Amino acid sequence: MICTSCNTENRPNANYCDQCGNQISTPAHPVQAVAQQRGPLEGIKVLDWTMWQFGPVSTMMLGDLGADVIKVESLDGDHGRQFRRVSGASSQLPGGLNAYFESLNRQKRSIALDLKNTRGVEILHRLVAQSDVFVQNFRKGVAERLRLGYEDLIKHNSKIVYGAATGYGPIGPDSDQPAFALTGEARSGSLWWGGPHDGNPYNLGGIADQMAGVMLSYGILGALVARERNGVGQKVDVSHLGSLMWLGGNRYGIALISKNIPQRQDRGSVLNPLWNFYRCGDDRWIAFSMNQSDRYWPFFCEAIGQIDLLEDPRFTGMEARAENREELVRQLDRIFESKTRDEWEGKFAGNENIIWARVQDVFDLPDDPQVIANNYIVDYDHPVLGPSKWLQTPVGYSTTPISAIKAAPAHGENTEEILIDSLGYTWDDIGKLKEEGVIL
Image: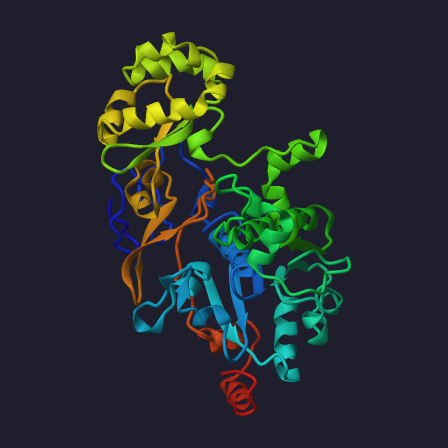
């Protein structure tokens, strides 16, 4: 299906172009003209004074939903532009680009300002006056010293939604302490979630930044709804600590109420072997998610061709299987190693009584038919990198669908455009600002 607007070739059954978002076929259920919007937040203006990951994730998600996001950078840029390696993997790309920065800052424009210069702050104040949202993730006190705190900005826009990202929350004895993802994970208790039950904490790969960014965008959306209904802006506070505690979810809920915390699971001694994963004969893995083990045990034994396990007194009930779990896992390991994963999938396909999935890695995902069908990863012809694949915020809207991807901006790429088109500056004004070191 070719889009007549941008000549992008899309999936055969696509209703909207993955590149520009325009309608390319008639939907099964026609919608009104509002479907031509870039997303539900089209028309919302966001000022993104953030760096690293926590803040940029939240504003990128707002951009995915259609908001016009202006990334406000210092004259030396977001420090995320300088990342060379992340968890041992190179993040350097052709053209001097950086995968860390690119993956966190698409859907944005960039303005570079010296915010230690009064003129730079004045420019940002003028942008605040015509914006809906302002987001910052600096250590407590930094924004206030630069006259960019919440109380400062409401003087220029009383209805501004002000998102503030912190490590441990806006109040309390440690509210002014510096924090990054790992410290948030450590203090929240989340380092005890994964890995074997061996007394050691395990790194979760920086999930604090991603989860806190999701929570910050969620909080901002709530504040925008409140402003729409009540006509008032407000400050939205989100922290690593609170976000990771919330991600603990039912695990923490059970612990706080019952005083018993669910234990970490070593796959070799998991209490329910039907809630586990197994290595197949080709070194690929398969996972099962059947919590009602007595219900599913007969179906499972039949599907793997091991009816004799039903008669083994060590495995005849949930309690017996839990008591003899290590032996059962060893037997299942030998059974699954006898065939390739494709062979096992052939046995389970179409069997509604077996709840299973492949254990995939990130490079399996672009070919996953469910990922493709739901646009969880989209194709984009990047101006420097060329054809490439990108994550998209995984939320579907029936009337205002998420659409186009814009590459992350170059440092200060849109400074002149924003000053002229949004604030009415002239080229003479811009020349003077450059001479004074206010802009690049």
